[in-house]
Length: 264
Ligand SMILES: C[S@@+](CC[C@H](N)C(=O)[O-])C[C@H]1O[C@@H](n2cnc3c(N)ncnc32)[C@H](O)[C@@H]1O
Image (cartoon, rainbow, N blue to C red):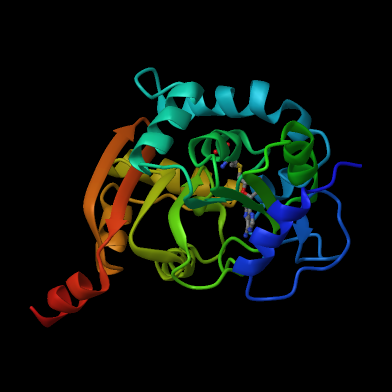
């Protein structure tokens, strides 16, 4: 069974708000016997917990669904990883949280970008996803954590960057998750999200909403995520749309800047 390198485990444990259990299965498990992180939201989230999906996820499932949802002009998978890494402006020594990391494709790239001395934490609620992620890892700058993405159990203002790709629309409380992310970032910290984006044409919106309800995924409006980030003190917002997806990035204003903007 793969284990986490002791130094890496200690660095993750230092950031947690709760004691890490002593069992080592290659990731720190804060959900124990609970099969699910947070309230269940539907069939897509349940599928993520099956043992088959992680085996085909990176090579087939994610690229295929990515093509369907991003359309012909969206970034490739490698392009998504590159874009996320660039928008987060990762540097050696930094701490980055990959929320809902799945099998860890982005986490591994972030681990390389923050080496030496940094830490990329891949957080997910699905045990099978994390088992696959751990088997693919081996970097001393990567640690995996099984926990709820909506309220990651990390100390506030300790993280330099947060990525949450292909998952926010699956959470029971996405707004609460955004509150948590803002609280975890250091002033000046960066965030990048890839999530759903509805179009403006009413018949298409109705079909998209129905599809979202059936699959247990929320359809966000264009501009909705950018606005949600602004109200949480993010600046330098960048939005990019492709098909039914939006990639939105921002930088948390310094504490002084947030105070100034709330006065005006
Ligand atoms: C579609 S995958 C995205 C994986 C990766 N970020 C990517 O872009 O390929 C969504 C992931 O979100 C995780 N997830 C969904 N709801 C969660 C929650 N409340 N807490 C933790 N993980 C959650 C699932 O287990 C799944 O691994």
